[in-house]
Length: 469
Image 1 (cartoon, rainbow, N blue to C red):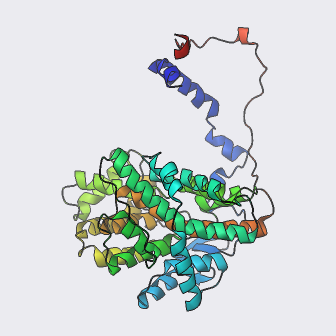
Image 2: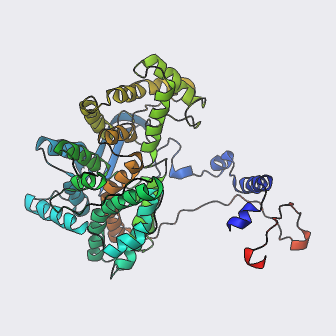
């Protein structure tokens, strides 16, 4: 295959790409003409209603006489405000991710006895088979941890004695197993990536059954296994916040879509991981991180609001940054006045940034949050309410915890597996129909042309298979 591709000249490859572009580009007017809701979005940007759920709700506005009216954002887990859960756990100075996972899976808050037992089960389930670690992770390293985790999750299928059983009991077992094991797979994938591609030491630590999920993650990615209680609880807050975000976000919808086909748990969760990897979804936190580095490299004083605003204007005008014209970390499909996840993370960022040496970064992010709405209005003509989203501050929190950039999105994934699992269970119990949206074909009819009568496009590679040379 590589020989075939290399035998085609650059100009011919460009010609082929031009053909692909010509034959696949859908005109924007066609979406209006056929009244197609592109991206499953209504004209006002809201999501098309495609299902019902009892797992979670995302609120950012209300409708009054047919008009969207902004309101402070709320994220509701099983009827309970997520912010109340986080603040409640902080007030009692305890970890909360395991409690959130229980709530999402079973629908009610656990008793202390239930929570203690569930925490022990998750700790014991973190272990992976020795042959799995060696054969599926160590022998096949990947530059991208999300891809490695996705392929490893598919690999777990072969280690499951009953992988295709979609009964409630079996899917619950698989879900608990994956909630526990995916952070372990992430850690191994990171260590193997360090050795194979970064040429750094790989360090693997035995599982400590006394650790919570947040503690276990920090212990597994640090060479000395050391972390403070404060650090672990900061990460625990991130995991509670990222655990779920409604059935309409792309990765959860993907998980439910695959689940609706009757496919196995490993296929459904691996599909969710693939969706979350994208820079328009879970990968956006890395985009914020890269944007901040770019601003710091080109702005003399990032604590100067005017200088930062001037550079952000260049980013919006595609004169700076990555050329996308986007200010990453700003704006959301549902939230208008505020994203409750960003509000909570900003509190922690403000509280800990000076202590851990990131005060300047916090000031920069706060400036971006404050000045961006006016810049969007001035340079893009966008007058709707725009708020910071969760990605604006999550990267700073991870930096405070000395977590490497390549683990930002995998950490998001390690928490979101709880929400995906809850939605998969709900889809199996209440779905009943395979998801099958419609697409309108806008190609013009044309006849079949015999091969001898087709126009030669002059793209004929000088290719001879190596075995025939």
